[in-house]
Every structure is written in C-alpha cells, then in structure tokens.
Amino acid sequence: MAGNTGTAGTTVTSRVMAILGAFDAGHRTLTLTEIAERAGLARPTAHRLIGELTEWGALRREADGRYVIGRRLWDLGLLAPVQTGLRATASPFLHDLYGATLATIHLAVRDATSVLYLDTLRGHASVPIVSRVGSRLPLHSTGVGKVLLAHAPDDVRRAVLGAPLQRLTSYTITQPAALERQLARIRTDGFATTQEEMTLGACSAAVPVTVGGEVVAALGIVVPDLRRARGRLVAALQVASQGIARSLT
Image 1 (tube, one colour):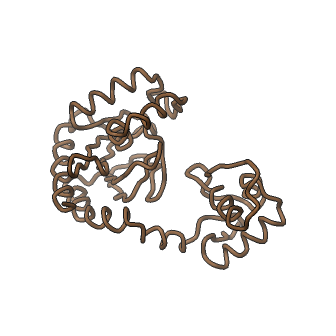
Image 2: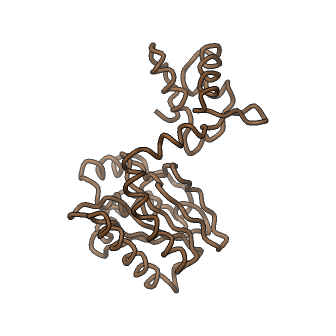
C-alpha cells in the first residue's frame, strides 16, 4: 500500500493502514497534507487519525512538523518470526563477517517483489548506503536482491522481469533479457555481484542462505570496489552463510 494515492477504504482500520502505507523508502518523512494526499483521505480525517497514531507511538512528529514512523511499530516488527528467528540466529555470523572485513554487511529476505533488509552493519569505508533495517529496495539492482530473485519462484521472476525495471544509476541493468541471463549465472555460480547499480560508488557481493534446499535469505557485503577482493569477500560470505544455515537447522 506504500505510496497509495487512491481512495482509502471506509473502515477506520483501512484508513489507518492507508496512513501508515503512505510511508515508504522514498517517503520517510511526510507532512500532514502529504500523508492525506498519499493515503487518499480528507485532511480533517487524516489529522484526527494521525493524532491518535502519534499518541500511541506508531508515528512521531518531528520538530519541523513532519511525521516519521514511530518506535512502537519498530518494536512490534521485531516480534515477527522472520525477525526474531533468522535475525537473531544470523547476528553473530554478521558480526564475525564485519570484524573480518570492516565492510557494510546486509541480511535480507524477499518480500513479494522487493528485498527487505533485516539487519545491517555499517562498514568503515565511505560508501553511499541507502538501505536501512526495515527498508525495501528493488530486487534487480541490489546484490542481495539479485540472489533472492534468482532463487524466487517462476511467477515472481516473471512479474519482476515483465514490469519496467527502474534505472537507479547509469549502471543499473534494465533490459529483462540481460537480467535473466545474469540470474541464471547467479544460480550456477552461487553468488551475485553489482557494480554501482543501486548507488554510484557502491559495489556489492551476495550469497544465498539455504536451508533444506530452500533459499531463506541472502547475505551481502557492500564495498567501494570489488575488482581486487571479490574472491576473498565471496568466500567469507559463503562461510558465514553456511554457518547461519547450520544454526537454523
């Protein structure tokens, strides 16, 4: 529902969902008017519901009057099984990987046709990073996303390849046939790489986390340049991925 500009439903629940759905990765802070417009609600209705959501902690009003998602929703999100199980199990392996590389580390899962970031450890190198814990990004332009897309069900791949592939930088692969060939190589090679496809100055490598023959997550690393260290970083990712998989079984 993120970014929904249609008319919201008639129930209070549907209107509240429309308000929360107005926020997404590209709209992290919104004014009252922007929320009302994106949720398809009359401004007085939005004002009343936003006030109640703010009081409860689902939203927070900043000093400049704009609204952001509140801590209460984050706390609830941590109770989701995908968070408490996979994230907690993977945490020590992510920290070991970070300690060995001092690079930005990502743990992610697929959410429909997006990649959902469950955990992120920020590296020492100055690399532009747009992902945050809980954020969603396109599958086709991120290392972890490509791994998850390569191992996604056929109908998911068809949906992604059949829709316009957003060009985020001049290096983003937007030709379906080229992306499909890359996905096939990922399944064969066991890892994915990106070269400044999500943001300029950021390259990534990623591997699947496989449990019982099923890819349950992707583990990735983001660095300024992969040319010299790709083999070493992929090997480190694979060791961490295998450790996570063993702990999950």
